[in-house]
Image 1 (tube, rainbow, N blue to C red):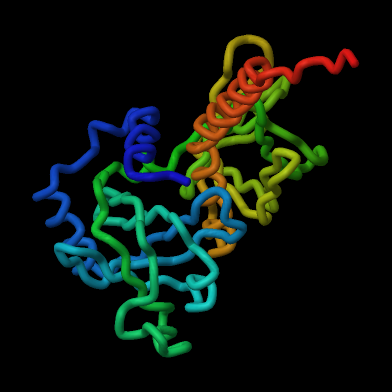
Image 2: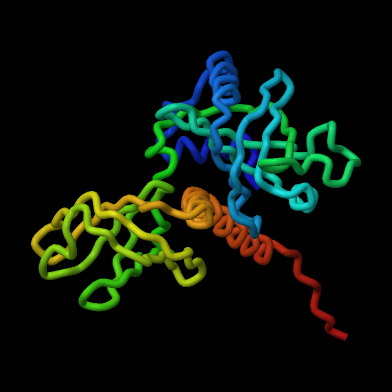
Length: 276
């Protein structure tokens, strides 16, 4: 489970610390986000089985926030803790940890009362920190080296596969092997999917934005933008990028747990031998 300090450490790892906003401007940015009423996303913790959902800021107070999220009150009750909110603000994105997520006070004890047009009214604690980040920076993430992800598609010559280099809700980059340029700029790649052996995305279409040679060995870097993605696709890719970002920390904690287990096994007191 990520707390505020762990989230700050994660964002420093991603070289985003320069985008952290001081408390005064952060409060103003949150209020601006509420005034624009723009829909962003509420992304669950990586251990949550669900996908991210639409979310917008409704009100900003000194003690907490009100959010409208496209999630049922029942789903909140079974545990959306913690979560990360991503709210667009012009060419920037506000990102903050959502703590103490619950039904808004006017809906407590009233089954379904908070379910309204657009979603469920939620309350949460005031965020410990806010980052205001250019959209590409916050949404581009690199797959972990230990679990590479591949882009799969179909073309005139049949199915093809490329190794994913980075991913965001707006597009991606992949490395393909081909004796000649695999496609041209502005080409449309239909029915693509992403897979790493555990996760497989819904199918989506791409429009190629760049094709560049990676040395003389027949490797190409392909950059592409999502073409009219469905809400299901955007939600799935948001969750995938969040998993990419938190994977190093999960691997570190797993290694520490194995190390501690080995140390405990060595230092455990031995029972004296029964020599009767």
